[in-house]
Image (cartoon, rainbow, N blue to C red):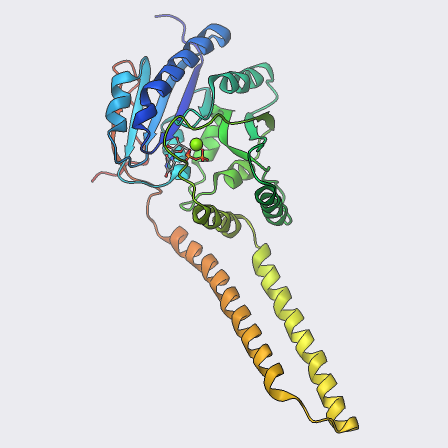
Length: 329
Ligand code: UDP
Ligand code: MG
């Protein structure tokens, strides 16, 4: 038997990407050839079907070459969870995570891998989206989000860093030990630590279809980031409560003095209404926010698996591995 070469696992989650299956399989084949030639590594591909409603998994199984497996989840769990399902299957010396929609090019992938191969002291190289296409308002919002979420912790969640990254096997294994059910990968990557390096890039346009991120999705996802990684909103609540109480006290004192010393009648009705509506609204908003945290606590405390595997389809040459996330039906 030939001496075994280091293995690069490529993890790619997909949801309804049948139209780009052939093109992505070709990209993977080209990437595999380049990785073998430049770095002397074997490639194993781990695709995760995140509950697609089209026949993407079948399409992929027809067009993928070499060593691959397709993990089919029992339903749509979201990209963050699908990435975990892929990492759970991975045993490679290095792991590359990329999208299946052709937005992550072979060129950048090779650059990421080269960076990791050439720098033994670095454990993770991630692609940092330079967001050329984003509007000013959107990038300001993103900046605010990151400065808020990073304001009180020992690790920084870098801006514009997504799942597109390559890491050493040890990092991938560390990530799989984080079993958050409501996953915010950016935060988990940062939490896990290791030596990480950024490589700026601009994503390609989508090959087909549209992004699965709606504005509402983004808001919900940001909230997820806060509730899993930041206590700042809760502190802001306490602070605003304190401020409101203080303002109330000052106003109360003013009214008191006016009545006692100047005999001015209290103009009651409008100020009362303002106070009631303001505080009532604030109360409800903040109660909702606390509710978010309670909800996260509840969902994390249930002993459910993070995801369920329906089945795993493998190429003949793929190593036979058990899906650890899989539970017997
Ligand atoms: N994806 C997934 N599950 C989901 C949503 C998306 O596996 O619930 C996959 C999708 O098929 C693609 C990748 O995750 O390969 C990135 O998704 P998308 O292009 O919608 O996100 P964007 O590129 O806009 O960040
Ligand atoms: Mg995309």
